[in-house]
Image (tube, rainbow, N blue to C red; front, side):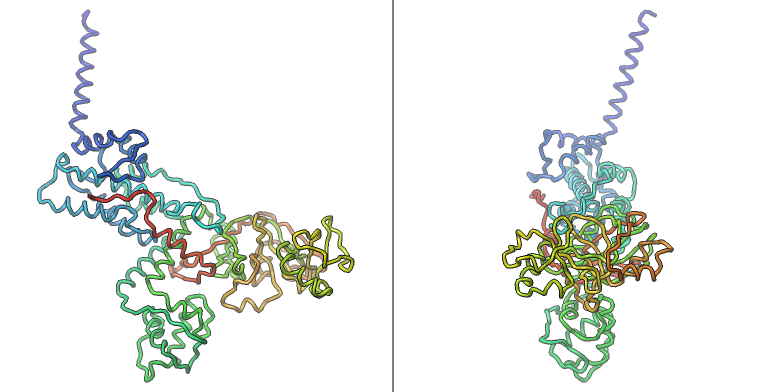
Length: 562
């Protein structure tokens, strides 16, 4: 028995050798070819197909190494069902507002056709195309996963107006693809990357419908405009086109008319429904805004929806079931949400051109009743001082006062206004509380770097306008008293007490007993709870640049088959 240790070692050697031989036999020729192909590319070197570089080379090499170079998208020399399902998902990313061609779609389809066209069962060792296809689809998966979760456009290219912090990825695409390879449904896997927003998933359905509508579209969408608004009884050469478009979108049934150029009462009724649906004043008149909307073809609406699906992917994690103040700048509307329900909606006035309201979030912490308006230095320089030099009584007429840097109220008659240069003005000007105060009777404060807040306004008639980009950047609210009552949540703050606080000679600061998130968004498309899509004018002309970036090809070199 002296040789027992040697016998044991020999047996272990045989077992180990048998194991490795068995493992070797279990590996497909395609797996061997994947390993051989990847071994040719050194660390840091891009994986290539026919001289074209992959964008996700590091992830691709790591992924296949971790799974012992086993193929994902084929089995026994045949394209598998997972690959077929993924091809369908790639074709459907247009419903996410993305371009399927950004994810190797044309080349993948070409490989599918070539491989499936062969009559006999293909053996992996005779089909290097299957390796190319595996790499192409894996690269497409990794890039699509990133774009669905975080957005295609990076934070540095989102525009200076977008101030929300970029969200971080919560998903490892390599692990996600491994789950798919092990049997997870690929549609579910990709859906797990969508923003946690009902309006995103419902937006996909709206886009799908728009694509279907576009396919049956036979109209001429040539732009129409008018020198003046059209009303019932007017005749115009463009009326037939507008009637046709109302019928196309389902707001007007087909009917016979003796005068095609006449804007009649039947068309008027359909037009009002269209205006209500698109957030316009339902006056039944065709002005610039209504005509502009009626000029939008299905393709144009697809572009608008696509841009906003991308914006939704940029949004950080938001708990929509908790208290939230949501302002959609493009919709001129504020919604106060509590436990997922909208308990108050109000029209708002937002920043005008060159004073655009940014997109950001900050916590609201206090309310100021009967506020002073501390006039920003830019307005002091550009508006107040020039007016003062022309009219010494300007401050008194506007209920304003001059204040030193220490807070002392100064006598304006002792200030030599003509010698004061705007940029070196040593004082600040504020408007006293009262009905004429530009902030109105109350303001709602969520301290931020942009000096933006929500406030009342004495110019109540402005809320009747359709286009309300009129402020210096702050948000003016239609129902400030109701908003205050919703936020205070205290029985002592009755309607009467709130009204009294809003009509004092001195301002009163009231701290909230919690911080309420305020989110300012810019969405020219969204969906409601019923899945209905809503479109609004791009008041700041932000959509076109984003659409151009969204539709552009990826920066990395594209892959083509030679």
